[in-house]
Image (cartoon, rainbow over all chains, first blue to last red; front, side):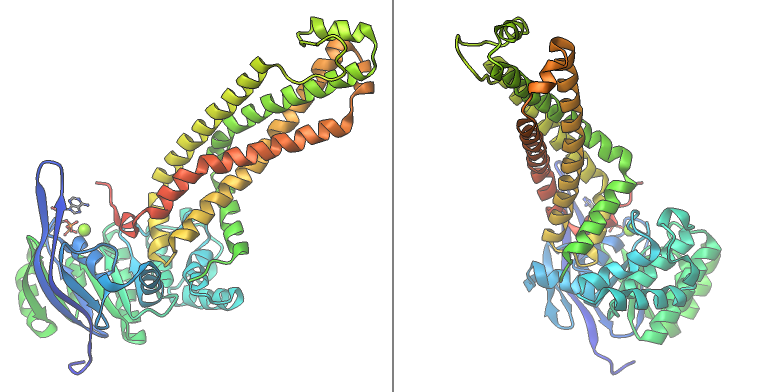
Length: 245
Length: 212
Ligand SMILES: Nc1ncnc2c1ncn2[C@@H]1O[C@H](COP(=O)(O)OP(=O)(O)O)[C@@H](O)[C@H]1O
Ligand SMILES: [Mg+2]
């Protein structure tokens, strides 16, 4: 892994939300390099700027200053079409609130990004069924999101995020709306997929269960990176942290 | 990045079917306005049918029913006052549709944001909303035109007797129905235009919003 390239590079990124009375500095200068294929967790207390950073990396929001590069391309330079392409083909998003399209079945949710990508319907259905199998919901393809439990919905969302074989999976609090065991299963699944398919997983979370599977953890506090820990260093600090969680 | 037309139709139709109650409320003002429009149009058609008979008895009956007839006229249109009321009701209907559709867009922020995260272009979102409105317009205007026509025909039956139906020019009635449906569709599309643009411009980051 040490010789793999940087798939994401964040350089001097700040983000200021201008509110009517005052400004909120959500990010105060973040520099970060993310290696292809690693499982990276962005950890920090609520309000520390994890989601804001996540949105910058995912091309969902623009930094106030600084740059975000994906595969060494400055995403601020992309036009609307190229951004849509990036979101469709290069990045898979996983949300705290699952965000399945409520009017579509599990299978239709998974095939949608493939249809956007121009894949023929039959091929998309076949691949979608395969992905549902992979996340352990092979028999639920005709179910609507409202007929699935939270954990099952998140599995469908993970299958959807994998649909176009993205290089990066971005997950913002993927276990935030799940109970302990279901959350663990989702983390396991993400880890397994990252190993099998070699995708880079970046997840923003304050869930300490995520630590054990991470290759690297970025601790963020008040919009700044506090420290970055490699897996080996982690085992030591987890000992200190675990009792508190 | 593509969204085939057939797939857009499928998604829009599904959206309406699943949110049936909501779609019905959005469409209700259209149904009412279009049925009023076709009631007036078809009412005029039956009056014209009676006038064609040249029978002074029917002519008097028409004048009593409130038609302004010039001496010797062989056809009539709706009165200016009636026209204004129809136009006004259509305008109110458009405002109602804009309001209902804007609310629908606000409610569906997460769905729209998610679409964009999956790679939808602005034009896909716009197309989905326009298609939905088109289908709602067609269905709502169809039902409205039917209601209005039935009401106008029954009304003329009660007022003038079966003779009104004997002399009515059915082609003119059919034309009125088609015209009313077309107007209904145009209004539905007009009403969704601004809300659809708002939806299309929505940022993908909206999908991430978590209400506390
Ligand atoms: N759209 C926004 N408008 C104004 N302030 C925001 C917005 N999004 C986030 N913030 C503020 O930015 C800070 C960081 O938020 P966020 O990135 O969501 O934190 P986290 O995900 O770590 O809980 C918080 O103080 C939050 O109130
Ligand atoms: Mg957050």
